Image (cartoon, rainbow, N blue to C red):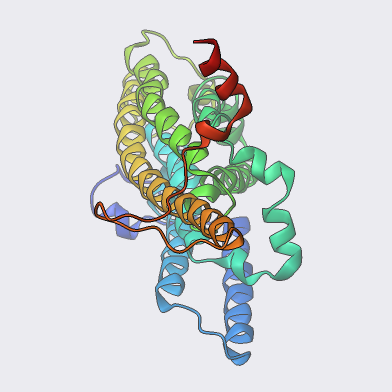
Amino acid sequence: MVALPAPGFSGLATAWAWQPLALAAAAVLTGWYAHRVRVVRSAGRPWPPGRIGLFAVGIVLLVWTTCGFAGAYVDSLFWVWTAQQLALLLVVPYFILAGGPLLLGGTRVQRIVRSRFVRTLGNPLIGPALVPLLSVAMFFGPLPGWAAASAPVLWIEQLVVLVVGGLIVLPLTGLDLPRSSLAVGLSLAIGSFELVLDAVPGLALRLHRSLSTSFFDHRALHGWSPAGLHDQQTAGSVLWCVAELLDLPFLVLVFRQWLKADARDAAEVDAVLDAERIARGEDEPEIEGEKGPLDAPWWLSDPSMQDRLRRR
């Protein structure tokens, strides 16, 4: 067996490992995606090249994250394990789903996407809360040790994290799931709070004075291996900084969705008001101070509000 060299910048391109499950998943996803794109285009419907590019970036990131530098050092350095888990949870699934594979999947896939389970995960009170809970499971306790001790456990764990990450980022990938502006606005508020909450696991690893995971009982040791506590503290810094940096673009995406949802809700309200005005046989309301029939405020015709005003 060739000795693993100390990690360096050149290793980002030259260090590789064997992860058969990830390679098989990438090959199946790529083949299925290419087939569905051909089907869509042969039916005369366009498919944006930008989506193909995003999907390709996601597949390349999947292969590099599991078989590249992180795959080579994942059982040797805890900070590499930490960086790999964050990438598989929040970065790789976003690019893959942004490529629109679920939009190509037909009615059965659409039914799954709009199922109660998926819509529940898209709830602004549930999705963001999963990230800190998953951080505890992935960076504390026995899971890192199990993965370091057994390659098959590591391979399966990586794919599970990828799937869970896909469920978390699904509401951000532009699939037009039915969410009101209030729900998206609540997601933005909770995401802002989560920006602070996400720092807690990283700070705990960074400031802890003893080993908090069984990873160091099973890691591969080399002549250049750092002390366990130093490696854990480095992992805490990675978790703290990277998690915070990843939260910022997610908040920007949620803010953009909030603007779109608000515009969509406003258009729906305007359509209802226009239909009611047409049903009453009224003309379009005038603007800029000119006279014309206008819709009265709702509280003027609300019985409970009228009763309250009469009491005053």
